[in-house]
Amino acid sequence: MGAPPKHRDNLVASAVALFRRQGFSGTGIADILAASGAPKGSLYHYFPDGKEAIGEAALRAAGERGAALLREGAARVADASLLVRGFAEAMTKTALDSDFTEGCPVAALMVEAATASHRLSDAGAAAYASWAGVLAEKLVDGGVAPDRAQSLGMYAVSVLQGALLVARASREVAPLKVAAVELQHVFAAALQSARLV
Image: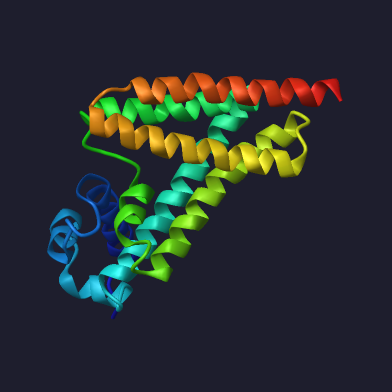
């Protein structure tokens, strides 16, 4: 009889949290097992390819969670400029709440593992694309052309990922606050231009 499905979810959630704090190479299988409370056999049952497989699952889960949070935000705000501002503010809160020990779980794996594993780089790229896609959808709702909206969505994700990295390095939220303000201006200008067409 196989391990209960709850073990898979616990393993993935634990891997996301550990990769976020310790990075991919700094996190071992034993760490994931200890944090999850799952028996060793369940890890290899669900992830027979070992750490790379659990890394891929962690990236997909983090990507889905981020996209879901963005969709929730999109439903609550009037336009995409407020959505991108809220996205930046959520990153700022995470940085502060963790005393700068937690970064983006996707970036944590991408920095270390993207060049070593196509499997991981593909999962990371999909996560980022999904976040950019939610931002783009909200821009399109405001009248921005789809190609421009997609470009701005990816631009915002890229800027925020860089700002988070600089914030963690400097242990200051200023880079994220600057990114929040500037991205809100860029999105507001795109929406204003769309209204004038």
